[in-house]
Length: 519
Image (cartoon, rainbow, N blue to C red; front, side):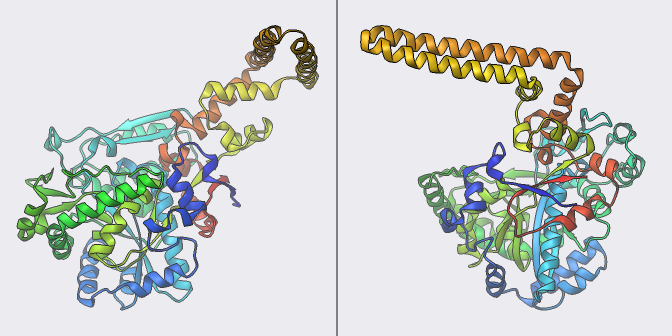
C-alpha cells in the first residue's frame, strides 16, 4: 500500500491558515510554540513538560478504571513518559473516517517517539462534554453500489429541549438493523455489523459505545481513551479550572488581542470571541449551560470548579494540564482553534505541545481507480459537482479527430480575427471595437458547440454517465471530501478488519500532504 500524495492546497475547502501551517509555517509561527516539521520540536516540547508525579499517579488510576490494565498504562505510570493526544466528538458509529485517521496518526507518532528513546503513549480524548447531539447522532455510509446512505439515532427524552453532554446520553434503538442491511453486500459486512451491535446496545452511553467500537476497530493498538466527564478526571482538573476562572479577565483580553492579530495577518479566528463571550459552561442537573458573568465575577465560582466545563478554546489547555502532552494531533479546524488557544497555554501552563496535522486519506477501491485511469483524471479534478464532473468526462470522450478539428478551428478563427482586427483598427477604431465584441461571441459559440458535442457523446455512453455518478459518490459525496463525510465502517466492511492496521503502516509523518490509497 504505497499512497500517492496531493498537496492540501489542491483540495477544495483548505483554509489559508491550514495551508500556511502545512507548507509555509514561518507565516503562522507566531501563533504556535513549536514548528511541526522541525525534528527538534518534539524534544523541545518534552523538555518543557513539568508534570507532578502526584498528578501522574492520579491520572493513571483514573485511566486504569476507564480502560483496564494495559502495557500503555504501565508505561504512562513511569516518570518521564509523555503523551501523544488526539480527540473527537463521540459520534454515532465513530463518526467520519477522519476520526480513525486521527487515532492512527497518534498511535504512529507515539510509536516513533518511543523507538527514538522518548517513551510515549497514544491517548484519545473522548469529547463527551460536547452538547451538539444533532451532529453526533448522524452516520453517513454507502451501500455495495456506492450510493450514499444516512442513518441517525433519535435524541433520548432526557435531552429534549436541553443542552446535555452527548457522552452521558443512553442509547435507545440505534439503527443497527439498517446498518446491517447497508453493509450486507460487502465481504466483511457481517463482521463489522457485529462489532457495531456489540457496542451500540440499548442502555450503553454514547461514550461507552464509541469507545468500544473504536477499540475493536483498532484492536492491535496501544491507544488509551479518556472520558473527561469521569468525576475522577473532573476532580483532577478542578485546580486548573479554578485558576482559569480567576484569570478570566486576562484570558479574555489575550484572546481578543489574538483575534486582532489573526485578522491583521489575513486569517480569521475559528472561534469568534467578543467582549461578552464566555470560556466556560456549567454542568448542572445533567445539562451543560453556558456561563454568562462579568469577567470579574467568574472567580467567585472557583469552589465549583469541578462542575465547570471548558469551551473549545480552553479545552485543549485543560487536556494538556491533565496529561504530559508532547504532541497534539489535530484536524485543520482544530489547528485554527489552537492558533487562538496558544495565548491561554502561555498564560496558564507556560508551555504548549507540538501541534501536528492528522493523517489525511482518500481511499480508492478498484473501480474508482480504474475510472480515474480511464478518463485520465487526477483526484483534484473529480472534486467538483457531479454536472461539472460529467463535463470533464465528456471532454475526455470526444474522438481525437473531432477534438483536433475544434482546436484547429479555434486557432484559425483567432488568427483570422486578429488579422482583421488590426486592419480595422487602422481603418476605423469603432469598427475594431465592434469586432472585439463579436469576436467574444464567436469564440463562445464555437466552445458551446464543442461542449454540446461532448455532452451528446456522454449521453450515448451510459457507462461514462454511470462512472461520473460513481466517482462523485465515492470521492466527493454531497460536495464533501470523502474522509469528512463517510464513516470508516463501509470501507472496513469491503476491505477487511485489517484495513486500519494497513493504513497505520502506510503513514509517513514527515509528509504533510493528503494521501490517496489504492486498496
